[in-house]
Image 1 (cartoon, rainbow, N blue to C red):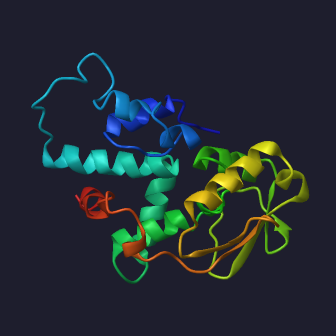
Image 2: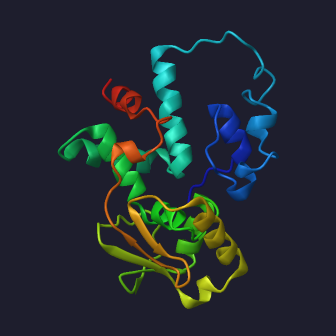
Length: 209
């Protein structure tokens, strides 16, 4: 299975902002984005670089792909589905990405990062409506119950991730019981509930060329 093997912190520095790919490290002073707030590589510190319209659109698409850990082919399929649905394509795209099982598992605190949450899913550690699902891209529907298996819930790493997520707070579209490791995907998030740093309109423009 294809994977992005680029160093996580290097990906964040390339996009110029925190993508929260390294779990708790992103919330500490050790985060490289704070220490070296410029792009990686020998030309990273050059100032005055201006992107074309296409370059800006491409960077935004790459940023969103990296945030959700989605490869290009998967991303194109999600965009095609978002474009087919009623409503604004950009908002539909973000809702589809947030409705993925690995994304919901991350929001519920099953892992410190989306990569860790995806690993929990792949290792048969998550149940959806009482059935074992090990496909990270599985699309959830509002009302679906997602929970950790007994084996996954007692792991120290999972416990630490749940405690960290509880301390930061859960989003409005998630209802979570940390003690039992069970949550409900209540609804697809509204655009106002998602980060303002994402400019999905640029992605729509890119794929509409």
